[in-house]
Image 1 (cartoon, one colour):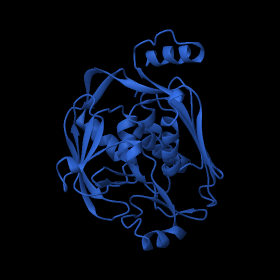
Image 2 (spheres, rainbow, N blue to C red; image 1 turned 180 degrees about the vertical axis):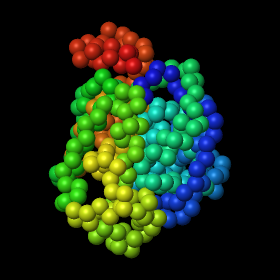
Image 3 (tube, rainbow, N blue to C red; image 1 turned 90 degrees about the vertical axis):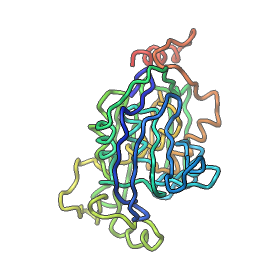
Image 4 (tube, rainbow, N blue to C red; image 1 turned 120 degrees about the vertical axis):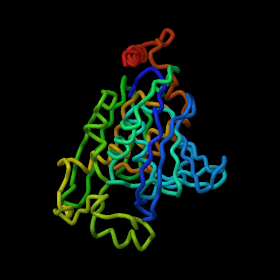
Length: 310
Protein backbone atom coordinates (compact mmCIF):
# COMPACT_ATOMS: atom_id res chain seq x y z
CA UNK A 1 0.00 0.00 0.00
CA UNK A 2 2.94 2.35 0.66
CA UNK A 3 4.73 1.86 -2.63
CA UNK A 4 6.70 4.91 -3.81
CA UNK A 5 5.09 5.23 -7.28
CA UNK A 6 1.52 6.14 -8.19
CA UNK A 7 -0.70 3.43 -9.62
CA UNK A 8 -3.83 2.89 -11.65
CA UNK A 9 -5.60 -0.09 -13.18
CA UNK A 10 -4.26 -1.92 -16.24
CA UNK A 11 -7.77 -2.30 -17.72
CA UNK A 12 -11.37 -1.28 -17.13
CA UNK A 13 -13.57 -3.62 -15.15
CA UNK A 14 -17.34 -3.63 -14.62
CA UNK A 15 -19.81 -5.03 -12.12
CA UNK A 16 -23.53 -4.70 -11.41
CA UNK A 17 -25.62 -4.91 -8.27
CA UNK A 18 -28.09 -3.00 -6.14
CA UNK A 19 -27.71 -0.04 -3.82
CA UNK A 20 -27.98 -0.97 -0.13
CA UNK A 21 -30.21 1.95 0.77
CA UNK A 22 -31.95 2.76 -2.52
CA UNK A 23 -32.55 -0.85 -3.54
CA UNK A 24 -32.05 0.25 -7.16
CA UNK A 25 -29.96 -1.63 -9.73
CA UNK A 26 -26.65 -0.01 -10.61
CA UNK A 27 -23.79 -0.63 -13.02
CA UNK A 28 -20.29 0.35 -11.94
CA UNK A 29 -17.11 0.49 -14.04
CA UNK A 30 -13.62 1.25 -12.76
CA UNK A 31 -11.44 2.84 -15.46
CA UNK A 32 -7.69 3.60 -15.52
CA UNK A 33 -6.69 7.23 -14.98
CA UNK A 34 -3.53 9.28 -15.43
CA UNK A 35 -1.15 10.14 -12.61
CA UNK A 36 -2.35 12.87 -10.22
CA UNK A 37 -6.00 12.32 -11.21
CA UNK A 38 -6.91 10.82 -7.85
CA UNK A 39 -10.17 8.91 -7.41
CA UNK A 40 -13.13 10.46 -9.20
CA UNK A 41 -16.68 9.11 -9.20
CA UNK A 42 -18.52 9.90 -12.42
CA UNK A 43 -22.30 9.67 -12.83
CA UNK A 44 -22.87 8.47 -16.40
CA UNK A 45 -26.60 9.21 -16.04
CA UNK A 46 -25.67 12.87 -15.66
CA UNK A 47 -22.57 13.14 -17.85
CA UNK A 48 -20.13 15.97 -18.44
CA UNK A 49 -18.24 17.75 -15.69
CA UNK A 50 -21.43 17.96 -13.62
CA UNK A 51 -21.24 14.18 -13.24
CA UNK A 52 -17.76 14.24 -11.65
CA UNK A 53 -17.53 13.89 -7.88
CA UNK A 54 -13.91 13.84 -6.61
CA UNK A 55 -13.40 11.49 -3.68
CA UNK A 56 -12.51 14.04 -0.99
CA UNK A 57 -13.46 14.45 2.65
CA UNK A 58 -14.70 17.99 2.02
CA UNK A 59 -17.23 16.70 -0.53
CA UNK A 60 -18.93 14.52 2.09
CA UNK A 61 -22.40 15.86 2.81
CA UNK A 62 -24.12 12.95 4.56
CA UNK A 63 -22.89 10.20 6.89
CA UNK A 64 -26.20 8.59 7.80
CA UNK A 65 -25.35 4.85 7.75
CA UNK A 66 -23.03 5.40 4.77
CA UNK A 67 -20.68 7.99 3.30
CA UNK A 68 -22.26 10.19 0.63
CA UNK A 69 -20.52 12.90 -1.38
CA UNK A 70 -21.82 15.81 -3.44
CA UNK A 71 -20.10 18.18 -5.88
CA UNK A 72 -20.75 21.87 -6.46
CA UNK A 73 -23.32 21.02 -9.13
CA UNK A 74 -25.34 19.05 -6.59
CA UNK A 75 -24.48 15.62 -8.04
CA UNK A 76 -24.40 12.93 -5.37
CA UNK A 77 -22.74 9.55 -5.02
CA UNK A 78 -23.49 7.42 -1.97
CA UNK A 79 -22.24 4.37 -0.08
CA UNK A 80 -18.75 4.84 -1.50
CA UNK A 81 -16.83 3.63 1.57
CA UNK A 82 -16.40 -0.03 0.55
CA UNK A 83 -15.22 0.87 -2.96
CA UNK A 84 -12.82 3.44 -1.52
CA UNK A 85 -11.53 0.98 1.07
CA UNK A 86 -10.69 -1.55 -1.64
CA UNK A 87 -8.87 1.04 -3.76
CA UNK A 88 -6.94 2.38 -0.78
CA UNK A 89 -6.23 -1.05 0.65
CA UNK A 90 -4.67 -2.22 -2.62
CA UNK A 91 -2.76 1.01 -3.15
CA UNK A 92 -4.67 2.37 -6.15
CA UNK A 93 -4.17 6.13 -6.54
CA UNK A 94 -5.86 7.06 -9.82
CA UNK A 95 -9.18 5.70 -11.06
CA UNK A 96 -12.45 6.95 -12.52
CA UNK A 97 -15.37 5.05 -10.98
CA UNK A 98 -18.40 5.28 -13.25
CA UNK A 99 -21.90 4.78 -11.85
CA UNK A 100 -25.18 4.92 -13.76
CA UNK A 101 -27.01 5.87 -10.58
CA UNK A 102 -26.59 7.58 -7.23
CA UNK A 103 -25.40 4.67 -5.10
CA UNK A 104 -22.52 2.22 -5.47
CA UNK A 105 -23.49 -1.48 -5.49
CA UNK A 106 -23.40 -3.13 -2.09
CA UNK A 107 -22.42 -6.58 -3.47
CA UNK A 108 -22.06 -8.91 -0.44
CA UNK A 109 -21.77 -6.05 2.07
CA UNK A 110 -17.97 -6.13 2.21
CA UNK A 111 -15.14 -4.87 0.00
CA UNK A 112 -14.27 -8.33 -1.31
CA UNK A 113 -15.98 -7.96 -4.70
CA UNK A 114 -14.15 -4.68 -5.32
CA UNK A 115 -10.82 -6.22 -4.35
CA UNK A 116 -11.51 -9.00 -6.86
CA UNK A 117 -12.33 -6.40 -9.54
CA UNK A 118 -9.05 -4.58 -8.97
CA UNK A 119 -7.02 -7.79 -9.06
CA UNK A 120 -8.82 -8.88 -12.24
CA UNK A 121 -8.06 -5.54 -13.91
CA UNK A 122 -4.43 -5.60 -12.78
CA UNK A 123 -2.40 -2.83 -11.19
CA UNK A 124 -0.21 -0.53 -13.30
CA UNK A 125 2.79 1.36 -11.88
CA UNK A 126 2.72 4.84 -13.43
CA UNK A 127 6.33 5.65 -12.58
CA UNK A 128 5.36 8.97 -10.98
CA UNK A 129 6.33 9.82 -7.40
CA UNK A 130 3.68 9.11 -4.80
CA UNK A 131 2.98 11.47 -1.94
CA UNK A 132 1.63 10.65 1.52
CA UNK A 133 0.06 12.51 4.40
CA UNK A 134 2.22 12.08 7.48
CA UNK A 135 0.71 12.77 10.90
CA UNK A 136 3.06 14.96 12.95
CA UNK A 137 1.03 15.23 16.14
CA UNK A 138 -2.13 13.74 17.57
CA UNK A 139 -5.50 15.09 16.44
CA UNK A 140 -8.63 13.83 18.21
CA UNK A 141 -12.38 14.37 17.99
CA UNK A 142 -15.01 13.10 20.41
CA UNK A 143 -18.76 13.03 20.87
CA UNK A 144 -20.12 11.61 24.11
CA UNK A 145 -18.65 8.13 24.54
CA UNK A 146 -17.35 8.05 20.94
CA UNK A 147 -13.92 9.17 19.82
CA UNK A 148 -11.49 9.01 16.90
CA UNK A 149 -7.87 10.08 16.73
CA UNK A 150 -4.85 10.08 14.44
CA UNK A 151 -1.37 9.74 15.96
CA UNK A 152 2.15 9.76 14.48
CA UNK A 153 3.21 6.34 13.19
CA UNK A 154 5.68 5.08 10.60
CA UNK A 155 3.11 3.02 8.67
CA UNK A 156 -0.69 2.94 8.63
CA UNK A 157 -2.21 1.26 11.65
CA UNK A 158 -5.82 1.06 12.73
CA UNK A 159 -7.19 0.18 16.16
CA UNK A 160 -10.99 0.01 16.39
CA UNK A 161 -13.07 -0.78 19.44
CA UNK A 162 -16.84 -1.28 19.32
CA UNK A 163 -19.37 -2.03 22.04
CA UNK A 164 -22.97 -2.91 21.16
CA UNK A 165 -25.78 -4.00 23.46
CA UNK A 166 -26.58 -6.88 21.09
CA UNK A 167 -25.08 -9.96 22.73
CA UNK A 168 -23.88 -11.37 19.41
CA UNK A 169 -21.70 -8.29 18.89
CA UNK A 170 -20.85 -6.96 22.35
CA UNK A 171 -17.30 -5.54 22.76
CA UNK A 172 -14.72 -6.25 20.06
CA UNK A 173 -11.28 -4.81 19.26
CA UNK A 174 -9.27 -4.96 16.03
CA UNK A 175 -5.70 -3.68 15.87
CA UNK A 176 -4.06 -4.12 12.48
CA UNK A 177 -1.02 -2.76 10.62
CA UNK A 178 -2.37 -2.10 7.14
CA UNK A 179 0.92 -0.98 5.60
CA UNK A 180 1.99 -4.63 5.49
CA UNK A 181 1.21 -6.00 1.99
CA UNK A 182 -1.79 -8.33 1.86
CA UNK A 183 -3.15 -7.50 5.32
CA UNK A 184 -6.11 -5.47 4.07
CA UNK A 185 -7.19 -8.19 1.65
CA UNK A 186 -6.84 -11.02 4.19
CA UNK A 187 -7.92 -9.41 7.47
CA UNK A 188 -10.38 -6.65 6.59
CA UNK A 189 -11.80 -6.81 3.05
CA UNK A 190 -14.31 -9.67 3.50
CA UNK A 191 -16.04 -8.31 6.63
CA UNK A 192 -19.71 -7.54 5.91
CA UNK A 193 -21.89 -4.70 7.09
CA UNK A 194 -24.31 -5.59 9.88
CA UNK A 195 -27.62 -4.55 11.37
CA UNK A 196 -29.86 -5.46 14.28
CA UNK A 197 -33.13 -7.10 13.25
CA UNK A 198 -35.04 -4.74 15.54
CA UNK A 199 -33.81 -1.73 13.53
CA UNK A 200 -34.69 -2.92 10.03
CA UNK A 201 -38.34 -1.84 9.99
CA UNK A 202 -37.49 1.65 11.22
CA UNK A 203 -34.69 2.02 8.68
CA UNK A 204 -36.90 1.00 5.78
CA UNK A 205 -39.69 3.35 6.90
CA UNK A 206 -37.09 6.12 6.62
CA UNK A 207 -36.08 5.09 3.11
CA UNK A 208 -32.90 3.27 4.17
CA UNK A 209 -31.72 -0.33 3.74
CA UNK A 210 -34.29 -0.89 0.96
CA UNK A 211 -31.80 -3.14 -0.85
CA UNK A 212 -30.66 -4.95 2.28
CA UNK A 213 -30.92 -8.73 2.65
CA UNK A 214 -29.15 -11.68 4.20
CA UNK A 215 -27.11 -11.78 0.99
CA UNK A 216 -25.44 -8.44 1.72
CA UNK A 217 -25.57 -7.89 5.48
CA UNK A 218 -25.16 -9.76 8.74
CA UNK A 219 -28.42 -9.57 10.67
CA UNK A 220 -28.28 -9.89 14.46
CA UNK A 221 -31.14 -10.69 16.82
CA UNK A 222 -29.87 -10.58 20.39
CA UNK A 223 -27.39 -13.44 20.70
CA UNK A 224 -28.36 -14.94 17.31
CA UNK A 225 -26.85 -14.50 13.86
CA UNK A 226 -29.72 -14.91 11.39
CA UNK A 227 -27.56 -15.56 8.32
CA UNK A 228 -27.68 -19.31 7.56
CA UNK A 229 -23.89 -19.52 7.10
CA UNK A 230 -23.13 -17.51 10.23
CA UNK A 231 -20.10 -15.22 10.52
CA UNK A 232 -16.98 -15.32 8.37
CA UNK A 233 -14.83 -14.61 11.45
CA UNK A 234 -15.69 -14.29 15.14
CA UNK A 235 -14.72 -10.59 15.02
CA UNK A 236 -16.39 -9.79 11.69
CA UNK A 237 -18.28 -6.86 13.22
CA UNK A 238 -15.22 -4.89 14.30
CA UNK A 239 -13.37 -5.89 11.13
CA UNK A 240 -16.15 -4.24 9.15
CA UNK A 241 -15.80 -1.09 11.23
CA UNK A 242 -12.09 -1.13 10.37
CA UNK A 243 -13.06 -1.48 6.68
CA UNK A 244 -15.28 1.59 6.98
CA UNK A 245 -12.47 3.53 8.64
CA UNK A 246 -10.13 2.72 5.74
CA UNK A 247 -12.75 3.89 3.23
CA UNK A 248 -13.53 7.08 5.13
CA UNK A 249 -9.88 8.01 5.77
CA UNK A 250 -9.04 7.41 2.10
CA UNK A 251 -10.95 10.62 1.42
CA UNK A 252 -7.93 12.50 2.76
CA UNK A 253 -6.69 12.13 -0.82
CA UNK A 254 -3.33 10.66 0.17
CA UNK A 255 -2.13 7.44 1.76
CA UNK A 256 -1.72 8.15 5.48
CA UNK A 257 1.38 7.63 7.57
CA UNK A 258 -0.24 7.51 10.97
CA UNK A 259 -2.15 5.45 13.51
CA UNK A 260 -5.92 5.63 13.87
CA UNK A 261 -7.50 4.91 17.23
CA UNK A 262 -11.31 4.75 17.32
CA UNK A 263 -13.88 4.00 20.01
CA UNK A 264 -17.50 3.44 18.90
CA UNK A 265 -16.65 5.49 15.80
CA UNK A 266 -18.76 5.79 12.67
CA UNK A 267 -18.79 7.60 9.33
CA UNK A 268 -19.66 10.98 10.87
CA UNK A 269 -16.84 10.93 13.40
CA UNK A 270 -14.34 9.62 10.82
CA UNK A 271 -15.15 12.55 8.56
CA UNK A 272 -15.00 15.02 11.45
CA UNK A 273 -11.52 13.71 12.22
CA UNK A 274 -10.25 14.50 8.72
CA UNK A 275 -11.83 17.94 8.87
CA UNK A 276 -10.14 18.60 12.21
CA UNK A 277 -6.80 17.37 10.86
CA UNK A 278 -6.83 19.64 7.82
CA UNK A 279 -7.90 22.55 10.01
CA UNK A 280 -4.56 22.22 11.84
CA UNK A 281 -1.75 22.49 9.24
CA UNK A 282 0.99 21.91 11.83
CA UNK A 283 -0.50 18.47 12.64
CA UNK A 284 0.50 16.95 9.29
CA UNK A 285 2.81 17.28 6.33
CA UNK A 286 2.79 16.00 2.75
CA UNK A 287 5.87 13.90 1.99
CA UNK A 288 7.18 12.12 -1.09
CA UNK A 289 7.43 8.39 -0.45
CA UNK A 290 10.83 6.87 -0.98
CA UNK A 291 12.55 10.23 -0.60
CA UNK A 292 14.38 11.19 2.59
CA UNK A 293 13.09 14.37 4.21
CA UNK A 294 15.57 17.24 4.67
CA UNK A 295 17.07 17.18 8.17
CA UNK A 296 14.00 15.91 10.03
CA UNK A 297 14.36 16.03 13.81
CA UNK A 298 13.51 13.67 16.64
CA UNK A 299 10.44 11.50 16.06
CA UNK A 300 9.99 12.91 12.56
CA UNK A 301 13.44 11.53 11.61
CA UNK A 302 12.42 8.03 12.69
CA UNK A 303 9.12 8.27 10.79
CA UNK A 304 10.81 9.53 7.64
CA UNK A 305 13.33 6.69 7.63
CA UNK A 306 10.63 4.09 8.22
CA UNK A 307 8.39 5.55 5.52
CA UNK A 308 11.22 5.49 3.01
CA UNK A 309 11.66 1.78 3.62
CA UNK A 310 8.14 0.91 2.30
